[in-house]
Image 1 (cartoon, helix red, strand yellow):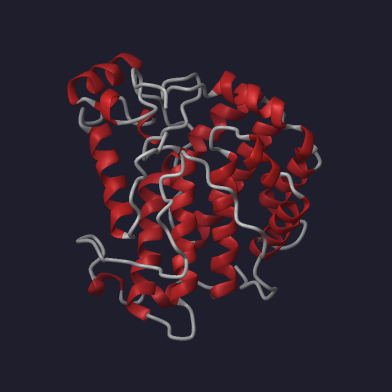
Image 2 (cartoon, rainbow, N blue to C red):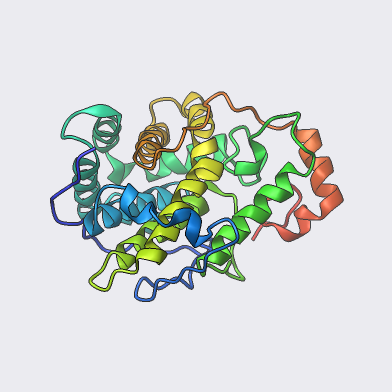
Length: 306
């Protein structure tokens, strides 16, 4: 894939809803602490393995941020940002930088989305979101990662996944907010974390480049895509597309899938299966009853509505 040469995308930052878990992040002070899985000796060459410089990192960060806001619970102020002329122009420029102009799935998905008329689509998106995803984790189209997996997996699959996500976030200085309204495995939270990682990558690519930190940051992106975001996004977007069809929320699913396909190809990570099944609802409920998840994780079945 060729390295983009155009200027990085520049638009106003997306408004952060109270559901955002990473309100403590400052791009002026990127921070990374290697975890046991990110030993320097294992990632020493990672800084040289991925094409692109600061512009590509910022472009990827912007698209991750756009998708994080798009799949958060619909909010009128956030939708105003998503559908603004500057955001749409920035998104189009980002897609041109990530994929050869007018070719490929990402351009096709973006064209369909922009032609749908985002400015007037909020009410329809809100209704479709409620219908397909709902307020709880176990709706007809779950938007939480741990609802997807092998039905024969270890019964501790779900809490282990959540613990792994928490370890990723803490290693990069991200602390869940006290008023967060989503679980750590919500799609918007995972997209936002990748937006943070790619923004940190851009910081580490600056004039005083920190090669070791850059290597750790890129290695973390690969691991997070392979083990989390890239693993279940194809299955989620497939279910959502079937549920809402060609309406705006379905077109956002197409954009998310095309972007994640590109991210996995860029970072040499296998894309997860679109056929990934949902874990049985009764097993999930039994597991949560036993481990206390309903009382500690907003959005889990039985949790109080924030």
